[in-house]
Length: 96
Length: 110
Length: 211
Image (cartoon, rainbow over all chains, first blue to last red; front, side):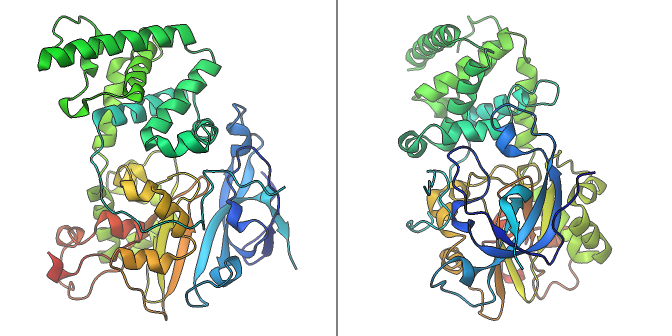
């Protein structure tokens, strides 16, 4: 069993990292603070799979919810609008 | 350094969504089939993530110039070359053969 | 045409509509022939794979959604494990997990893949061109309400718009809300209201007066 670092309800911050290779964390959400909504499972690491390796051990994947108004300056919609993004654990940091 | 890669386009300015569509051509379905067949668990000659990495590495100009399945076959072919499943020479010869055959067929059909 | 070609590649002649051919079409053909000649796969396998994808179409997803509208227990099972629930009605969605997300009176869901074009293809077929376009992939995350308006969909301000960016190992299927005025409709009738676009979340399901 892979130990899970986060649980639903936890506040997390997406790492502000900009590696040049293949990653699955969108540019626009890096540095943003969100809330873990759900654990989506454990999957081989795509950043390894992309280079022909096996991606093991697997990485926990979380569905993280963000307030649109906190992701975009001047978001043009109600404050209640949200964005849910699937993010692998190594891209998240705890935020208290 | 804040590198934003070309395919990573969420939030960028863009024009209205053009909702017009085309039916997939047989060659596009064939690209799809090649990739799926090569990535079955018993073969593992390709993975989705490798295919995506290869598409991203086509670079900004080519990425936008090619259609969706053109990007797919470009990436898949590069991967097959890298992995030694096919060689450059085999590919070049086969492409020349296919082109000659199709040109002849097309002339025959006219 | 091409009766003179004796082996597998006769199966791969381009369709008339594929003319004129491009460099990548030639490359596709060449790769297909090479992997068959090398015994990596057979021409039949490639053909079967094409047939499999041709069999995947929005009607499958519509059948599943219609059942969730009439059977709350089934809906719960779809939300819990879409692959298992799909298998119950004879649909094989393969091994990439699909997550069903439900539109309610308070939440409207819309799906995009900003990094590539991930799509629940084994449930509703290959994606439309606009789903893969730069415009949709760029804008759906930042101005979803404007994008929705471009599809003729107005979501009132008291309803949350929830955008799902399909970045990883899940694919998303929106369960649109059941339209009013369909109280006595059966699953087959209901399925006619459920469009591909409504399962991506850019439109609601059709109303009875639309069909």
